Each structure stands twice: as structure tokens, then as C-alpha cells.
Image (cartoon, rainbow, N blue to C red; front, side, top):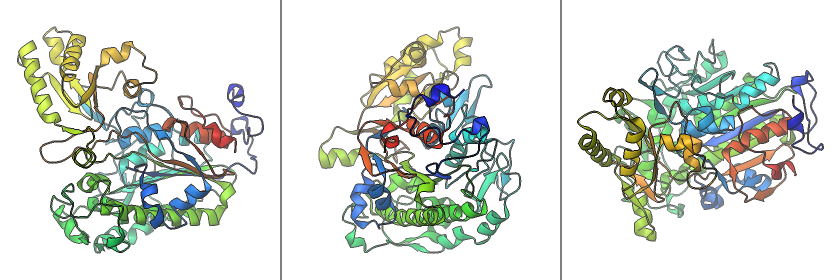
Length: 546
């Protein structure tokens, strides 16, 4: 059944192993442990900007010795961690894996659905409801799921992240464990979907109460703040700061925690949150016996770049630079531990971004005279509602507007005996008149046409007939949605770094455009297994040729 797959690659490289045929022997070139180091909001220019301040063991080690894909992108319209992590782990687009956004409307049940929330499962590791999560809405298998299938369950698959959505989408359906930070308790937790009994080593880790210890300190800069010349002064008017008022070092984290109502959520916005994820991963590897035999295991570690506060400071902030200087040390420690335990040839590591980040539109316009601006969705939707009321009569025509999607009220439209397709078209035509909107495309057009490549390809990639909205929106380049008080969680930047390291990979670079869907089939090729059946990406052959 693998005949077609094997013909894709030179006999020199494949097969390394053929678990599906019952064999358990592998060649010396097959990694025993695959580690994905994934960073939320990883701007492509961060590594170059901060290079001279990085140590030799983290980013510099990967970039100096690894293979760099210098033109790497997510081909999705909606650049969200939920959407992109599902794409990264499955090797296909939202049109197949079904995670089209954080939330969508289930038309059959007529209710809003969250991508991962699932109260059928319970929290494991704390008494909160933050573990009521599952991957049931993910419609295609992940690389980890495929490993489980072809090794008859012997491969060990884990993920660890600050955020639940990243951990769940990285782990997939069949993982041995997915862990994330519980904002209410400060503990690392999981879901009964993955873990029936919380492991003792994880109990012991939580017993150290690291989150409380981190938040009892001040966040100060790692180096002399005057040396952070790659960034803009901490008191920049482009930065609103914590709670709209704290925007200079040092930060009293205990005070910030109290002002946020006692939640540990603030930890996610600091470098110490990443350190906690790293520490948890270092405990997990030996305790869960990852990489100890010839059956490949998979671990995905997801770090964050200031998480939800990144837009309060921005890509050019001292806070962001300090986050990456400290993250560099965490990655160096993780690499040192893995390499010392397994050797470089027995591991395959990839470093990439989960999302990127855009520079503030006002800054780009004022400083560099670029075409940029802010778009107020709230005002635009208000105008759209008035237009629909005039055209079709008074009614709640719009059921939901979120993350570049408009869901119309199908029940009301059918009750009024109107055409859903006609209303979709009217909404798209109306929105296309707004400055700041590049395209508004109705679902009917996306269903009926094929847009391979070009400006409309992201629409097709992100469109799922059962889950997507009636109209999808793409903003003009340089334009960013902003409400009355603050930027919304949005980036137009689809480009993120990608570097491969270990497993016989030699130093090199390709500037050929690669896609996030290419990572799964490339790893599958290294492991000598067929990729998941839903994969739409391609093997990055430049790496295989080394």
C-alpha cells in the first residue's frame, strides 16, 4: 500500500523503516525523537535583529548548523494559532482539517462552537474547568496520529504549551498527553481526553509551584536596557502597556497578577511562562521515556511571544526583545539536554512559528510613509446592518462576525423566504466598497470556483463548506482591524521562520517558497512512513538531498 509513496523518493533515503509491514528495525539515519519547537507570533526578522545578543546554544546553534527555509508561509486566510497549529500538525489546510477559526456556527445545531472546548471530558491535574478540552473537532489525522497507527501504538506522542489550543492541536487525537497552563491555578494540566490518571511526575512538578514563584518576582531586562538598540524605547506612545498604563521596566508581576483578578494568565505574557514550559518538557522527556528505543517518538513544545499582550507592546518593543533573549536561553537548555541524551544524529528538530506578527499600522505609516491604516469592524458592521435592514426589512440579519467571517441568520432568511446566496452576494458587494478591505468573498463563490495560487488561494484554503461563514474578508496589506480602544488579535503576515536540525541534516538554505503543510510529509519521509492520508503539502526535497 506504500508503493506509490516510495516512488516519490530516491532509493538512497527510503525506506528507513516500514512499521506497517510489521518490522521494527530502522537505519542509523532514522531519528528516535522528533521535536517541534514552535513559537507563537514569531516574526521572521526577530532572529536577524537580535542575533548579536543571542548565545551560541539556542537560535544561533540551529541557524548555524541547520537547514533554513527562508521563505516559509502559512497559506491560510485566517492567521490564528488554532487554525495554524491544526495545519502544522496535519499537513493540510482548514478546508480539510476543519479548524477554520477559534469559533464557528454549527448550522445543524444552530449554536456557536469552540474549536476545542468539550465538557464531555474533565480536567486532569487541577479542579478547574480549564481541562475540558478535546480534539474532536479536528477532522483529519495528525502526524502523531499517523505514528500511533503505523507503530501499533508504540510511538509516544506528547505536546506541551502555554495555551490549550496549541497543546490540543499539536497533540491531535491519539497522543499520550497534551499539557498546558491552567490560568486559574498556575498548574500544568491536561484533559481526560488524553490522560486518565495525572502522572506522578507532573504532580511533583506542580508541587514546586513555579508559577507562584515566577509571579512573586519582578520582570527586569536580561541585559542592560540601554543596550537594547534594536528596539524602541519602552515608553513609546505606540505601546499601551499592561492595563493601558504600565509600559516600562521593571514590572512588578505580583502587582499585575492582582490587577488581573488573581489570574495566572499574566504569566503567559512574560518570558517566565516560556521557562515553565521548557522546565515541564525537560521533566517529561525522561519520565515518559521519550526516545529510549528504536520506535520514533514525537514531542511538540510551543512557546509564546508575550501572548495576548503582544499588541500592547508590539514587535519593536524592549519587552519583545527581552522575551526573545530569554527564550534563546530556554531553547539552548532544551537543545543541550536533548543532544546530550540522544546525540545529534538520533534526533530531528524543527523550529518554526505558529503565527507571525504585524508592525503597528500607525507606526509604519508615520515612520516609513507606507500605505497602511486601521479598520474599524464595529462601525462597518453597524453600517452593514443598516444596509440590510433597508434592503430586506428590519431583522437580526447578522448572527456572528468574528475573525474575518460573517455568519448570516439562516433561520430568519428562510423564514422571510429570501435567497441566502443573494444576501451573501449583497453583503460581499457592500463590504468591498470599504477602504481597508481587499476582498470580501461569499461562500457560494468559494464553493463554485477553484482559486489555485494567487490572492484568492487563502480564501479557498480556509473555506470549509460546513463551518465557514457566509462571507469571508481579507484586509488590504498594511491595514489592521482596531476597535475604539485597542488593536484586535490579527496579523496579515503569513511568513514565519523554519529551520531543520539533526538527523544528518547539513547546513543549507532554500529561498523557494515552502508552506506549513510541507512539514508533516517531510518528517514522514525522514521516518520512512506514509504521511497521513489527508496531507496536501509536499516533501521539502532540498533537505532530503543533504
